[in-house]
Amino acid sequence: MTDPTSEPRDGFVFAATGQAFIQLAAEAARSLRATNPGVPIDLFTDGEVTDPVFDRVHQLGRSWFRPKFEALRRSRFQRTICLDADVIVVADMRDVFEVLGRFDFVAAHEQRRNTASAMRQLTRPMPAAFPQINGGMIGIRQSPETQAFIDLVERTMIEGNHGRDQYVLRELLFDSDLRIWVLPPEYNLMAVRQVEVQGTKFTAPRVLHLPRLHGHMKGRTKRLESPAAVIGPALWRHIQRMIAADMTLGGTGAPLARPVDRGLFGSLRAISANVALGLSRLLRR
Image (cartoon, rainbow, N blue to C red; front, side, top):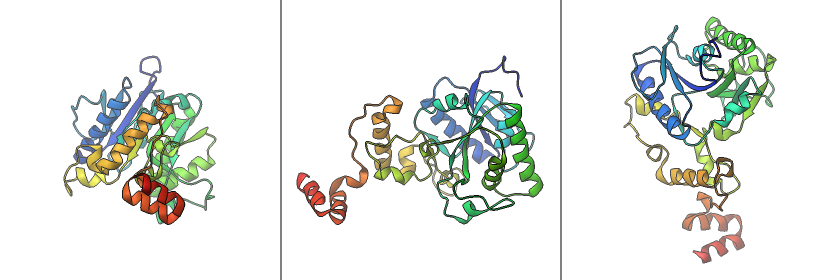
């Protein structure tokens, strides 16, 4: 671990191998810096990087498909948030560092839990009530205990030749004595279309986790330059309205209509669910 007296207490890290993912991490870092100012951002990589969006660039000791664990293990920060490269950060998430003042390990649940990947086990069945966490956003507080845990995860994956990390993390977290906190899904939102049914009572996304970005950066599809281009302008406008109304982000708390309720199709959908309510909406158009 680094000397805590010589480095910032809190910081973000990315870990990326290969030029395509390095470029993707840089784009993610730009969205992070725009929404979370004042916090350093480091990159762990196997390439040469001069992009000024990163405060420091560290060379990886091992170039493999899960460099995040080396980044977490070697981070110069006492409280580290590690993000995957395929994210767009859309709102302030610095409050996670406060949570890391009390807990050792934070992350959000895997949201696509009814899949073969989410059902995979390491050495024994795990209870459904303790599902996989999603590795796209992991926070740790540096300590001998968290260092030992990250070492164990990395060693288990390498020695067992495991092709994915989440089922490994699931069992090792279940067996650990670490203080774990599960973050709300908006801190690592993969099912982005969920916000179409979210209105005034829902807090806004902080991080959009979008694996579809892999194809854009590998040249299989046209590179997308903005959140609106990735998720569509209507959904992006709604997320911006959610952020403006979100009182946990200093927003107004103003009423916010759900996208599924807007327009003619929203009225017809409401009619199919509740005739009286739907007709009243249609007549008010």
